[in-house]
Image (cartoon, rainbow, N blue to C red):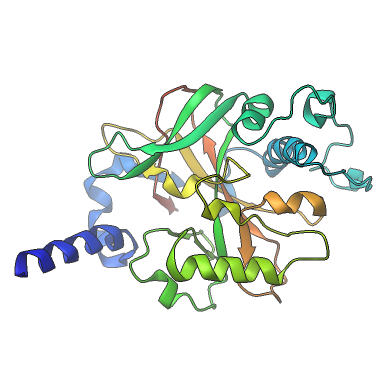
Length: 288
């Protein structure tokens, strides 16, 4: 009985310790290869936000077309994030190829990712490039979940939850797809619906997300033997992001009255990544 209790405690501690500040501080110097350092928070971007927007729009447009949607003609030209022209390949209206999920990802981005058992011992689930080729500087995945401002309550959701991501400015993203976290996300998503438009994607809570990029919470931490090949990059969704495409964003604000842009976190490739490679990130970024 005592041994089983101790084992449960150790398993909980392994999940929680990465969010226990004293433990983090004491262990940072033990494995410097797992750290990512930037000179200041404004430089914590490997690629411009405009490039992230273009990648997401390319995928979301194809998903939307193949779910039977019609893109609305809105003058997004005022925003540099949004190209005016949509190519035939991005449009997907030829009818000969009704791409969905993984197929849409491969067609638009040239690669596929999916969840599999990690190659690291005792690491559980990981994320792998299953097909194609990922060039350096590519948006590879998104970190889904409910977005909390630093002053908003998250204590209950954070208990035994290894999926709480902390941004540099203190914003938190709860990427847990179970328990209270799951219920909170569904509730907030239903609350924000605007007529026929869903403002976020709840399918990341299932085994088959409509947005195949929304598996970033399962990317494992790097090690001395497995250096990072992707990094986290904070991305605030621009005001002009097409309303009909927001249904593929796997994030939602906890508070409806939040006046800040929706915070998303994407994972960007640090180098070229080939098929069958597992994705590894730096769980810690030190800002000087």
